[in-house]
Image 1: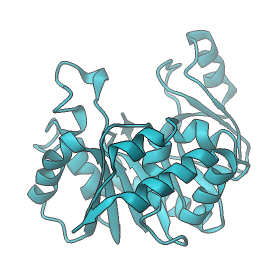
Image 2 (image 1 turned 120 degrees about the horizontal axis):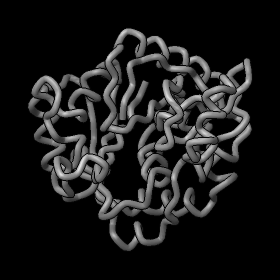
Image 3 (image 1 turned 180 degrees about the vertical axis):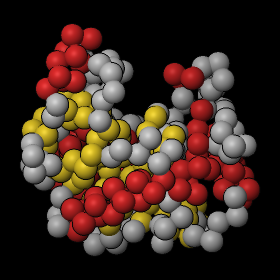
Length: 259
């Protein structure tokens, strides 16, 4: 399995501990390790992975990988500025083979139940190999208004994605019993994702391809040119693909998760 680790966020919700040049994923809050380092360690099963970050955070991200002494192959995909998750994931996918299964992870999540995490990743991998786009849902413990929700059927097919709700609506989702928090983690075959992206967001797909074709690529470092980044429409993977595709499955993940 391949990995895509999204490490370019600014972590504004944890201000003032988290700042632009030291966002929360790089702060060493737990066990003298950053959430970014813990994410990489937790996924040591990757045969190789790509870290998507912005240019200003490159040396920080690289130094923190050096500190934990990895045996896994990896590269960096550096964006001059962000255009949200859909282009970031698309460009990273374009550097893998079409039949690779990839696990897409934010770098700023805390996961306490690592054995359970490995099991749900295996469950998601099997669904991805069968041609599904898989998202990971967290069982709500409260009517939280800060998360999106995933409404699903008994066969784990997704009925609908819901935006961050009001308190009243969140309470309804909680009582309904078939709604999970949207964790922002995904698993799929590269080919499945890129075909669905081309179907529902063709301009993102085309311009991401163009940006990768023109990128400066040297020794595990892929730099996207600013002019190419400007041409890519800005959108999240949820809006660009997940909310439109009919190939979505959700795996419930009781993994001690927090973002």
